[in-house]
Image (cartoon, rainbow, N blue to C red; front, side, top):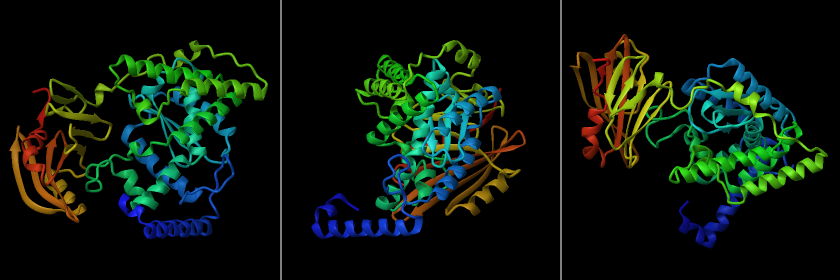
Length: 426
């Protein structure tokens, strides 16, 4: 609904009536959803069973996309700490899962139903177990307070988007072409929700015998890093709003909870934690590919392709995504399931709502290539899709370049150039 419409009294009253009706229907359908922390009714349009199922669905995709870090002892350690926090939470009945992802990003996040993720990138930035527990507690609190479920429900109510569409579509284009398993940017919480998670995280950490002052120390460390890096905000800071008084507030909450429980907790010895992360892979894993002088190299699959200068690249275990700086075009590379480029191209056309414009087969750099040029129409929006399926090393590399119809002519040279694959080393 457009903002101007809300200024009209009739539309405003009608909207309120619609929301009241939906809330009433929600109460009948799901037994009056409640906030597990306050016990008060809350606007969550999915039941707990649906919440768990949603988390499980996307957990499978996230694990497939990023992979679990290959260190069973470290994974077991994080799992044990996480379970201890979950056990003292207001939703201890949930089946929680704490995963260490094989990704170098300095971030942590949680999905509905009990799924919490600690990429190896953020583990390398912690200086002690207390810092790890503070962030684990904060993310566990998002699950307990149903923050992500609330975000999804509000989007369904006010935007009309389906739950899976809002989560799955990293870019508003054809489903499956350019989607990450989940758009984590959509899981950005309000300041009130972040403050609640800070408060609950401090509570859980203190109840498990950890000094939550370290949680404030970690936020301060990231803030210092951000200031020293020419105001380039670390990922965890960008996805978790950081009010100026957050450091003082977390320290104050820690003092209050230690007084409430009658304990005086000393900081944990960092030696044990640092031993546990000794040798951890830091930053992007070069085995999954790297960029050098505007060329992407993949050592394991032995291929390379150019990356235009003004394009940003994101790489994971299952895909390579390059996006132009103005985000008006992208190229995504994945491995096709089919054994030949011809079969992969046919399967792609059969699986997507596309109108084929042209189909060509050729040999490029001694490799068999099938190229498709097609268009996807969604209402008045037309998205141009240039696809290349390249046979190499017994596999088929599938490239899909996308741009809006208006932007496509200006970007066509670049999106055509990007999928020009050559074997590596030459």
